[in-house]
Image (cartoon, rainbow, N blue to C red; front, side):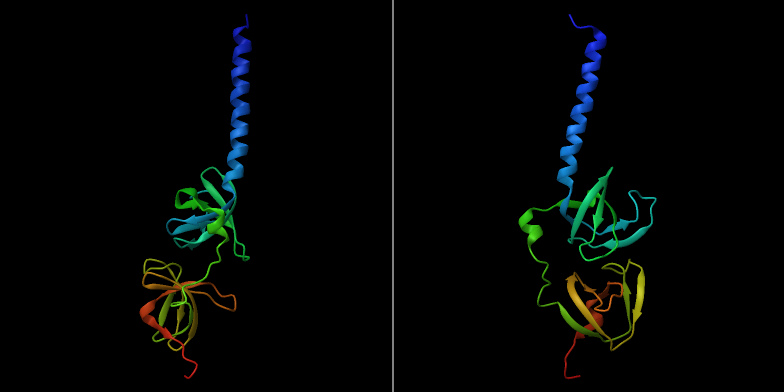
Length: 175
């Protein structure tokens, strides 16, 4: 008959080995393409006490490369800054969705000009901080719409941001 000490040892070993195997399996499943389910802060480290690098808008695809607790480590495929997002604001996406190219809506994407002085904001809404002021008459490159806000990305490497739709009009080469 096995001794109680031997049984405890076997139980402990079972828990350790099964926990290790589960973590290996889990670690493999968290890497890959995810989508944000809300506007989410990208932080410089895995926790609320780390500074916010930027705000990722709802509905974008992100590349998850690791995990620390409830925080997913995100790396940009385009050379942007890496950081961490709270996993509750993400969901994994299937390989067919992840492989689909990110094509902006043709009816929105393109060159516009500002029709008045406008605040370029960090996210799609007036609650987000202003990151730049753009004077009237300046051309901007719009990549997508999010409600009444347009995502603007610079072709020269400046910080991307958002501005209100009503503050721009389509650029016409005849101006």
